[in-house]
Image (tube, rainbow, N blue to C red; front, side, top):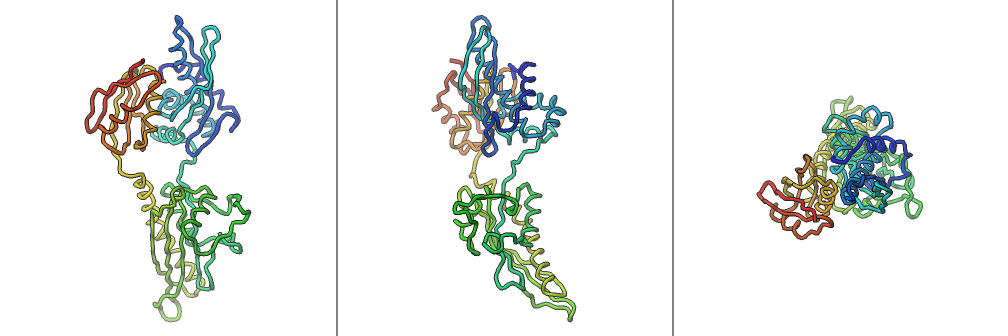
Length: 395
């Protein structure tokens, strides 16, 4: 970044000592923070001083966010890496910002900026350099599986009044498979929620609306709802062993949209000398079998639900003013057809962006032409099926 100075890096380290929550507001996987930046006025050029102040405030905002992503000791030990990889490329992690107020004192131009920072992008960028900060970016999954053993007259389920502490055997097998594939399984017994009527009590057989309602109470991204049943199977080996079958029928729902994204029915056999052991073994076996299949299908469904899109490069010239590039990225990100935007590389006056867009590069270029920018314009120089080349031109 052009304007990052030793004083701003020191300030970024200082703000890491600020207690959590005093200057930041968390929403999902982004964080909104307020930060002060300073620029020096040379020869009466307040425009450049303002740009410098905003650039410094964005670096400070990144420092504030990192302070809550990892313990202070980790930040101190890895600060040289964080400075090189994150702080000097602040624009890659800023989703948007606005200047709340500004003032000058002598040659110093100061701004108070509210910036929205992407935790996911910071984590991904650090992971690419062999370093990961501990953030909760997993897709949260809530399991709602009613389970019936051989000795049960009716299935057991934890969302009813009488079986609040029931733990399904099949759930205990599904959860590790989901966790191993990057999902975060919610421990419903450990979460303190406040149902609207003060009582979490739903019927045994949940429809989609009821399942999603429970999922939203637990802030889940996905709910897995269904039944797991154990029964005797016809095979036997003398008097010593009998066979048992477990059947698991589940469906996965997005809590945001209530859309069913996965549906699975699996069976598994087990052998045991008694009904209790056989029942438990069958439920465990079918849970383990279904867990692997479910995790794979969930990953595929989650990734494809956004729809068909095309990725291409956007080569941007005229980026010597970091503020212009940040504004351009924010405007692109707000286009309804844009699914993702990442910064591949930043040079002194050029940047290479990667855009995931529902449409062609030509349609993307046409959408850009309809956007207005506060302090600069764009010239689109070339459009190919793989790349767009454009320039940011100060007004």
